[in-house]
Image 1 (tube, helix red, strand yellow):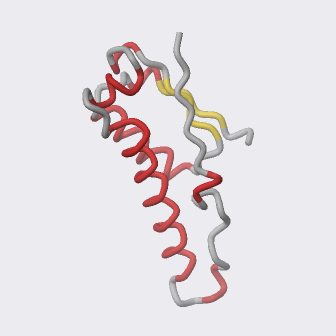
Image 2: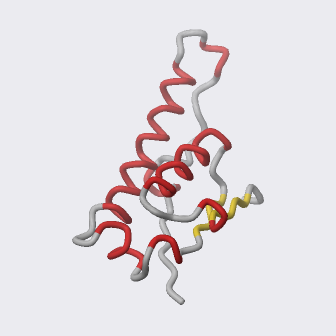
Length: 99
């Protein structure tokens, strides 16, 4: 068993979005920026290895179990779709909104 952890909080991706009362789309821009930071971190931590995701996790992606904790619904869905595209079985994705 091997654990690969990625913490996005230190990268600013966990920061709260701007107030939606601003009315100028700054909340949407902040959310998009946070999502981009998370995906950049995923690329660096998982997908840009010599053998792709398999090289990062040390096993076939179909055999991996992924836990997404503290990720909002829309962003969690995007990450889940990307992981499935890379070979992780959808039934092996676990979500935790406790954090």
